[in-house]
Length: 451
Image 1: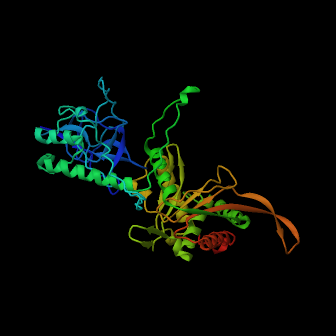
Image 2: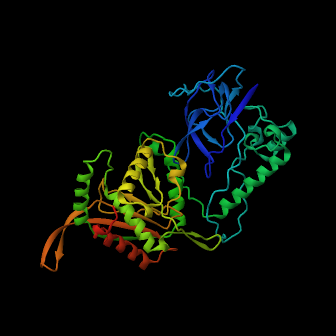
């Protein structure tokens, strides 16, 4: 008996992902816990297990396809008595099946659960707005009942879905075996209308019609996928939702850098010692700063008119990868020394670059640190990673002449440019300046740091 394996719920806030690799091929025996595909979610690549043991009959999804929770992945035949799956699935991805030659693109192949409404601000519009139609509404003629995979629904329910402009494959059935009823279709339409009204009443993301660039020369269109698509959407939303101010300052790290180099030379004599970087030191300083200024360790909930102050300290660190910017999070930074943070930072950065970060490792930061000093530049204004209250940007340190009032002469000093962008609804300008100055003074007193 053939069983349709669908995309399971992969955890909180994960509603969809892009299929990047097939790990098995038709004819393979798999166990219930065997990974069968790789799925790239917003900022992580996860392996999806089969969920049932048996023999793979056919792939119902293709590499490059964006799948939502509940989408059909493959058909599986339960293993006959005496058959057993291999202990491990082959490491090499299975060949991608050639797409069928059709006049129109293949539709999404299976029913999926309706995703939760997006988290957007909802100010009262100046003029009443009528709800926009469901985003998936299309002419009924473009949804033939027999297109794609079979869907567990009666002809009457299918006809109702067509009349309402709903793709029956996107309706989650509550009946036995996922069977779809009229009530399921109506509930799905109600959910779509609620989502559309919520988006329509929010600020929205402005979309500009672009000219035809091919009029002036050769062009290439590249789809926004994976990390780049998520980064574009998240930063546009953060720009609209967070009224930010950027506080600039410079820290004299002459003594700190000399101290760091001495410590690194000692660490290199030890096996498996972490690399002591300025980023690891800054993470530790940020943790101490959040203790001194708890208003920076907060998030604003305008919907409930509440300020959420956090009593934990997790720091996100921006990591440059070939797929785009990822921000793994170091937990309980205030409870760890610099050497432990350096070791964890090295591990998280490596996992991010090797596409091994888990969704949990990319969530829950109280503040973000982005250090571009290794690349260069004299300063920049980072965008606050909503719903955090602040982000600290670090540029390249440079040696500059600084006047010494004691010796009445200029001295060469190593100065580190810092830029703190913060949510002005949470952090006042004076507090932002005090926070940045406190960080500078901490960096200028290296012996106060706990290594």
